[in-house]
Image (cartoon, rainbow, N blue to C red; front, side, top):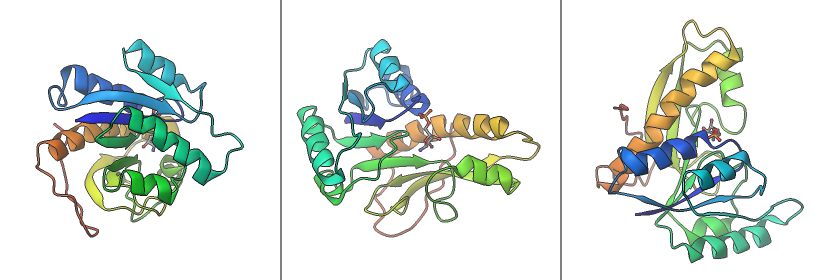
Length: 204
Ligand code: GRF
């Protein structure tokens, strides 16, 4: 299956996915069709190129959402992706985009999407001194972090006394969970939920 990975920043999840494709759980299951960014200067783009991935970008600055997204759909279609994998892509997708890849867009959210949506999920967990948070991989629908959950995995936050430590523990889980969830999806082990049901998946 062909993956289009979309990012806006650092791209640590992208790196984990590329590594899983190159010699991990996604080897033989997936290939990276393109790494795309709405920010031409996103550090993750350069990292992706360094890992040998095709890259593309189109600046979203000052653009109207629907128009911009229509152009992105065109660019992505050129690479014929089976799945669009959001990895720190800091844009809300327009209905045009969602419909173009309906049921084939995944996102990773660093919290339980039932408890926290939007930005700053690690800050939220840290400030509320949560003993645990949950990383969520979900399908993207037209809401913000509202799509059907494909997989969740807990992060033990006990004793994590800085935000940096919360993020470090969370990202380690993110990196395993995203690749594992895609692998399970592609091996037919995950049915695409039509309603809000969580499948708990232990990272291996
Ligand atoms: C991750 O925490 C991800 O869950 C969230 O955005 C962050 C992206 O980090 N959606 P990176 O660019 O993958 O390092």
